[in-house]
Amino acid sequence: MRAERGASQVEAMKVLVIDDDELLRGMVAKMLRLDGHEVVAAADGPHGMELFRKEKPALVITDIIMPEREGIETILELRRANPRVKIIAMSGGGRLGEIHVLKMARLLGADDVIEKPFAPRNCVTG
Image (cartoon, rainbow, N blue to C red; front, side, top):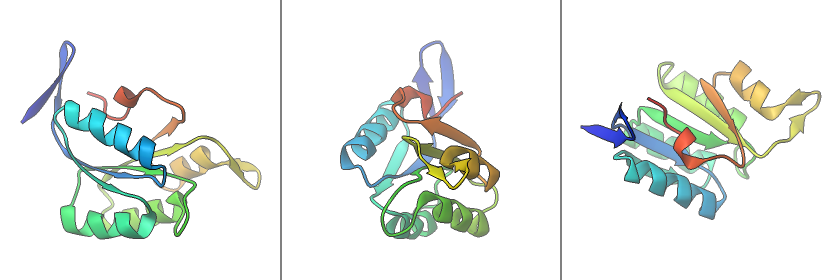
């Protein structure tokens, strides 16, 4: 299945969105579905990992600052579970000590990062 986006086509895929912000999680999921992707969503890292093991998505989009288990821990667990899964980390900013959280996410295994606020269409690129 291919998803149409403007003049280009993007291969439709299963995407897991993990974010404790219900509004943002719903918006990202909706935009991805409109692009033809299958989406599963979780409000925190533990539930996200549960869905990851069950649904086996090709892409995971995760927030960094969340209750229960932060996105950095989730990224590390995702990498241990499947080193080939694509991971996009997103955050509205923040620092852990001297390092910006998105830079840390990239260093620890995220394939790409998105700073909030962002255009939802930036989640999956062709």
